[in-house]
Image (tube, rainbow, N blue to C red; front, side, top):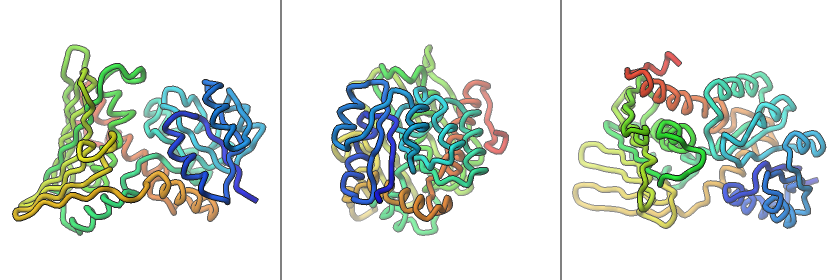
Length: 318
């Protein structure tokens, strides 16, 4: 029997996973929930799935074996807590959370239930990231620069700290992947409406600087640059079509420049790893479980706290 899945969210974010799941004979989407009934109906039609306007009703009536949550944090309500209480494994993308207390509560409940979970941080599933990791070996990254500059107008983001918490956290997760755990954060807000944020991150072997901004721009700019003596690794949406910073890698050395474009589908590989972990009932099989994601969200919370209080913040504080 195919594994029964449910989707909360029927927008573009869900589409990448639905496309990947459509190629698998071992799963079936049985229910789709979205506040936009038309979007839910269009998605459900291709699967013969039931349509819901309430995730509570969907979880109660369908009792899925796994749940995908593909709505922004401010629209998620308590869906992750409800799923955890019912013992339903969940995959949530976009990452982020309603706020830090909600994230901590969810992480605690997931740990108590020993629940298989996944958060949409795709860093470890992109082939160009694996190439970069192999190039670095065990060597530390002395300096890292990240930029998450989005056009203004996103309904869910009031300031740059909010942008870091809900979107820029993807770059924070990538920085942790390459540079290790963050020890200390110092953030400065810029602009009358705090539309800009510069965050200095101190790692065990180096430092990183991450800039987030909601200022109006003609186009987004999402980049990550890792630098050391005689080399530079650049990830950037400008290197490839779309706004995915992990779509291409540029390796610059003293005597040559190499450009690699991603060949795999991180969303499909991430979904497959999640389903394998669900089948094995092994929460430790995934490096992107909610406990690991909480580490990234803790850094984001520390940055927001630092900007608000005007002082460096030790991550261990929060």
